[in-house]
Image (tube, rainbow, N blue to C red; front, side, top):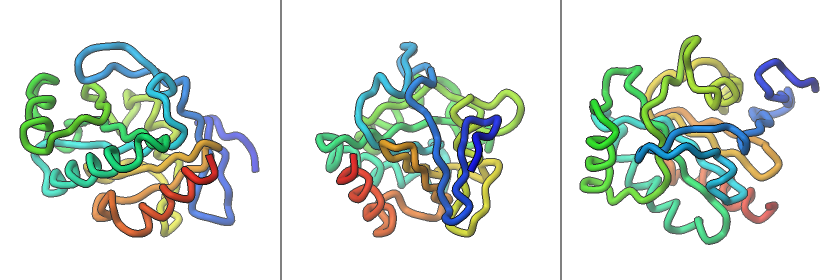
Amino acid sequence: MGRASTGVIEDMTTSTAVVDLASLPFTTLDGRETTIGALGGSVRLVANVASRCGFTPQYAALERLWQTYRDRGLVVIGFPTNQFLQELGSEEAIAEFCQVNYGVTFPMSAKVKVNGRSRHPLFDQLTAVPDADGKAGRVAWNFEKWLVAADGTAHRFRSSTEPDAPEVVRLIEEALAAA
């Protein structure tokens, strides 16, 4: 195992990677500058999200996970993107949509790019994490999810995997128990 230029250490025996997200800065949906580590928690569930996608109802499951596990150390973070042309225009419109339609209270970033040379640095690391089939690389669609444990071990779930699918919940509970 060796440290790649992306800051990710790959474990070739499993479909996981080790990432270091705590110091990564981002702008919140309401315009504040912060870091992922400043949000607290020891386990993070990150999703690239959009308001006008067939997977948009996954916001409800993300919010349920946040409400269920946040007191135990889970932080759910949404990163809106319009790279798939399915996100609203302004941060204010995104915030209103998420609150009115799904009651979202978990932290959200301002819109970011998840692919390409100008993608947010977070996605430099997350795109190196392989999914269950061992495939890493660019974000294929909205609502891909990454679960990052306290030790940096990361798991990637493609858009079709619901945030509260049994395999995701099992890994959340294991990560929280180990934190």
